[in-house]
Length: 406
Ligand code: AMP
Ligand code: MG
Image 1 (cartoon, protein in one colour):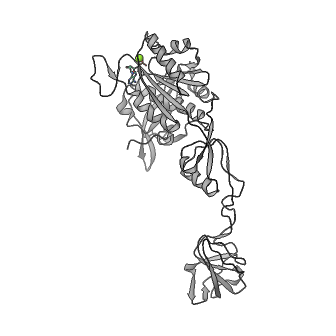
Image 2: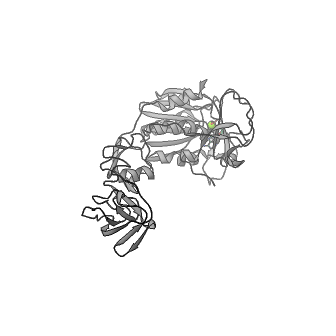
Image 3: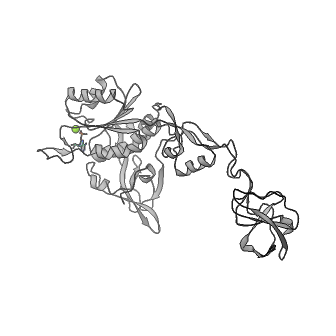
């Protein structure tokens, strides 16, 4: 069986990228840069005061020295003249430093009597001055291609005097559940039916990385209707189709044979992971298809560990792997078997530091325990039993953009 690491490599190296488009900064949060953004100005554009205070020649200033106040430099309106020896200017935060000024003394460290400003101490050249370009210089790369824009990077790009950015178009996602037994929330359940919940968790999970999630409903486990549903899904706008259910080896698990009959290439089917083993990844031309198992926790784990990285790569994100944290366990873990285990875990505090409490519920249909989790504890294949305090990799939902449940 394919190892989880090999499956992850294949999931992210499909090589499909969406096109690009130009968007205004206020529309760009969460978008992925297609090209690097370079600064069109120095920041700051001029030597500027970092304080409200007095601009001086540093050599004039010592304890008890009095300088003559000759003018003001404020943000947006500098002092035009050149400071002579024995003089100082009132200067406000963000104001350009006038010619001749090589230091700023904060106002709390002087006493003022009319036009006479008396200093308490020496200062040194450059003190309280932000030099031209000390944050960034014109032509510097502010944000690299393949980065996802966030509030801080957008403020940085704006400061660089760049009004719009070239970003990746977001992919369209199709979501199709399969299973004869599936009802829709609100239905009266017939005997043997359960409510199909997967679409309702996967849609919001994947939405932040998509232009639209197309809900394709529930398909039944019969060859002809399933083929029709998959064919329609693959000829629609979706760049990536996610199905749930029907990928195991039961008599009515028809997703893989039907995908094959439609000409899809099966990149992998079955991964040494727990839960989520029957997951399938296939391609039809430039369309990507993930067949997730039907059990809700398996579907979520497959979506978080394999679909999200593939979707990030499709979005052009340069580093599509989850950002794994390494945290101590709050309680011990038993030895693992031969498959990578993604165990539900909750963030807690132990001995004054963050730690992960394993949730000892392994049933892959058990959604209430999954909804208590803050992330997935990643347990390597055959890892021996681990004591409390052992450092353990943890895929934090918050770091994957999944809001905490509180
Ligand atoms: P399957 O992968 O089709 O063998 O389904 C495995 C288990 O997951 C079965 O108990 C199904 O009833 C259940 N299941 C399948 N699809 C869904 C769904 N969309 N929501 C909740 N449970 C599901
Ligand atoms: Mg089924």
